[in-house]
Image 1 (cartoon, one colour):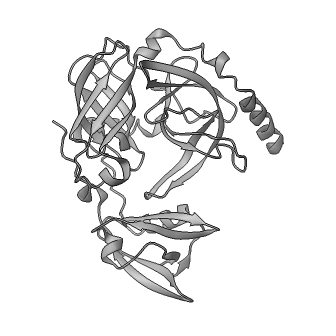
Image 2: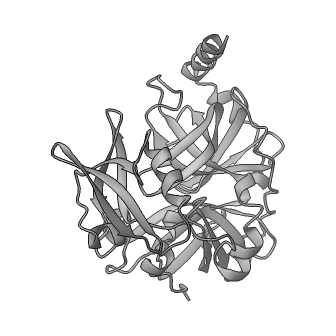
Image 3: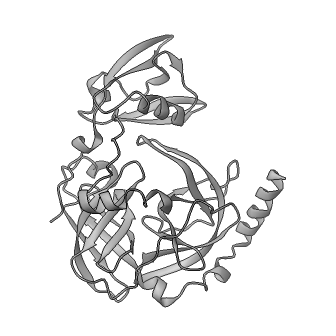
Length: 328
C-alpha cells in the first residue's frame, strides 16, 4: 500500500499540476512575500561557503515589518534590505538566527508595502499527498507555483543540522531560499531551505526541502526579543560530515574550530562516539548532542588506516564562532 501511494504521488508530480494549483493564491497573499538581499563582510566565517552577497525570499509575519526567512541568507550579514511587491526597497536589520531550525528573522525599517501578514499555519498534520503552494520573489516580483508534499522525513545536513520531520515537495521550485510554503487558506506551513535530487525516497524526483513552521512557534518570542532561542545551545564540533556508502566521513573542518584544533581532517571516517558504533549521520549528531552543553569533551572514534583511534574534541558554541553582530 505504501509503495502504491508513492507511485500515485510520483504520477501526479510528473503530470506537473502546478498550472492548476498555482491559480489558488491571491494578490494579498503574494504581497506578503518580499525579496531579501544581504551583504556579508569578506572576512565573515560563512563568506567563503555561502558567498558575500546573498539573495532570496522572505515572508511578512506581523504588521510591524517582521520578516521570516531562511537563516543562511542573513547569517553574519552587515547590511540587509527587503524589496516589497511594489518594487520599493527598504533597509532591514537582523533580529535573530536559530541554527537548530534554520530560521532567520528580520525587521524592516519601515512598513513593507502595506502587506497583510501571513498567518502561521499548522505543519504537524501536513501529510504526503497534500496540495500546497510555493511563493517566492524572483525576477520582478513575487510569484508562485503549485506542488505536492511527497514525503515527511528526517533530514541530516552536513553542517551539524538535523530536522526530525522535514517537509519535501515536488516538482522543484528554483527560487527556494526563504520561499513560503502555504496551504489553500493562505496560512504559512514552512520556509524553503534546499533543492534536493530525491524528494521521494529512492526516486530521482527533484524537489525542495522546507523547514516546518511549527518549529518557529516555541522560539519566536525569544528570537524577536533576544536574537536566539532560549533553549540550551547544541554543542558544536566544527566538522562538516556526510554519509558515503553507509559510512560517516568528515568532508571539511572549520578553520580554528574544535575539530581542527583536535587534529581531525577531511577524509577521516567517524566509526563511533564514546566506543559505541554509529549508524549514519543523524545518529552521530544525536549521540554527540546527548553528551551535554558546549565545552564538553566529545570522544570520537576515528578510523585511521586499519585502526580505530579515539580523538577527544573539546566542543564549542557555534554562536561564539560566528560573527553575529547586528546589521545596524
